[in-house]
Each structure stands twice: as structure tokens, then as C-alpha cells.
Picture 1: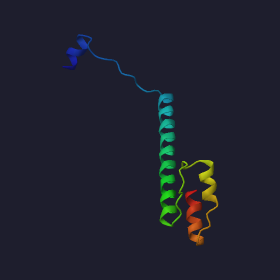
Picture 2: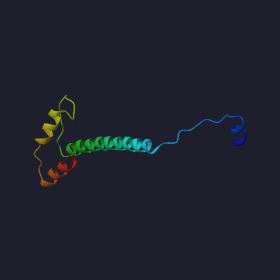
Picture 3: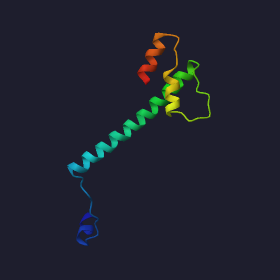
Picture 4: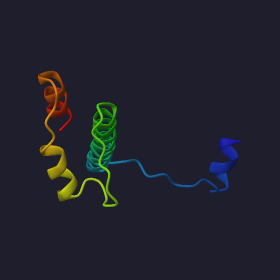
Length: 89
């Protein structure tokens, strides 16, 4: 079958990635990984705060400057909670 395809010139060409192509692909994957990790961390932080009774109760969107300022003003009940918040932040 391969011989027939080659004989009749029916094959399609393929693109073999260059080193530059591979490097660009790696960079794009890295950026996507970082974006996904940031999203996951934000969700974990919000869940941590909610679990400890700190709920952002406003109609404004989260992750705005106002929301970030609200989070920075939280006074935690223990040093471990403060450290957990710092690690997420």
C-alpha cells in the first residue's frame, strides 16, 4: 500500500518541527501551565478563606484591587492561618 501511494504521488507532506518550533511550543505550554496553576491557587485561596469564615460578600467581582485590599486587611485568628494565607498569596 505504501509503495502504491508513493508510486502514484498520493502522499501528503508533513511538517517536521524545527528546534525553534519545539522551543516555541514549550514556551506556550509553560505559559498555559502557569495560567492554570494561578487559577487553581486563586480557587484554593477563596476556599481556604470561606472555610475559615471569611467570605467576600459584595456584588463586586473578585480579584479586583478592592477584593485584594479586603484580603490584605483580614486579621486571622492564628499564626498558622496567617502563614497559610501568605503561602497561597
